[in-house]
Image (cartoon, rainbow, N blue to C red):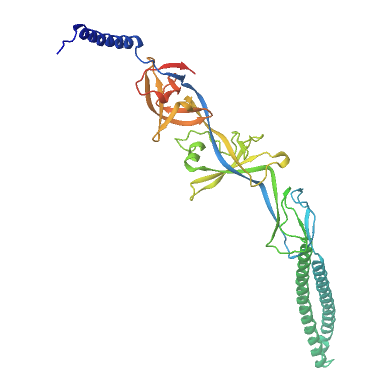
Length: 404
C-alpha cells in the first residue's frame, strides 16, 4: 500500500489551526453585543388637582305639569309648542258654556236665599210689633181684670196673643239663621262655579319652555290628564350619582376624607360640563344640593348641580359628564402613562439606575392626569423611568438611556 506524503498531514493540521485562529480573532474583534437603547424621562413632583367625572342627566330647574282643574272639551290651544310661555299665560281653553250656566244657577240660588232672609226679617218685624201691642194690652187690662171691670176671658185672650207673638219672634229668628246659612252656602257655590268657569282657561304655572301638547282640540279632558309640561331651564339642573365611599372622601366629613367639602351648597368649586359630543360647555356650574339619602340598590347618592343656560340651549333629558376638582394631591410623583405596564392586575414600571441598569418595580398608581399618572408608592421623584423600549429589556439588564 503506498505511503501518504507527510506534507499532506501537516497541511491539514495547519488549515485547522488557521481556521480556529480566525474564529477567535473575529470574536475578539466583534466584542460584546451593544446595549439596547431606551427612552427615559425623570419622575416629577408637584401639587396636582385631582378631578372626578360623573355621568349626569339634565332636567329643568322647575317642571310644571299643566293639567285642567275641571272636565270639559278643549276648544282652543293658545301657545306654540316648544316656545317660551310666561306665568299665567293662557295655554288651553275649555268650552265655558256649561260652567257659565252653573254660575247663573248658583247666583239664582243665592238670590233665592237672600229673598228668604228678607222674608224672615219681615216676619220678625211683624211678630215684634204684635208682641209690643199685646204687652200694652196686658199691661193696661191687668188692673181692670183684677177689679172685675172686664171679663176674665178677654184677659186670657190677650195673654195668649202675647205668647203667640213671642213664639212667632223665635220662629222668625230661627228662619233668619237658616236663611243666612243658605246665603253663605249659595255664596260659596257661586264662588266655586266662578272658579270653575275661570279654570276653563288653563294657564301656565311658571315661566319656561312649553312641551308638545298631549291632547288635541275637541278632546274631552279631566283633571287626571297631563296636557303638557312647562320647564324652567335657565338655570338648568344636572343630576349625577357618586359612590357612597367617594362621597365620604370628598365631602370632608370623615378623618380619612381629603376633600374640601366641594359638594356643599355654598362651595365655590366650579363644575365643568362635557356635552354628549365631547365639547366643553361654556358656563361653569355650582353644586345646588346633595340628596338626603344613599340609594340602597346602587350604593350611590345623587348630587344636583345648576348651570346657567342663556338662550335655553340645554334641554331636559340630555346627558353629559360633570367634572370637578375633588382634592389637591400635595407633592405627587408623576410619570407618563406609557411608562406603566399592567401585569396580571399589578402595575409595573422600569427604572434606570445611575449605572444604567434596569430595575423592574411594582408600584401603586393613583388617578390619571391627562397624559400623566400619579404614583402613590414605589417611585421617588427624579428617578428615571423607561417610556419607550422597555419591552425589550429584562430586570438587571444594562441599557443605553436617552432623555425624552
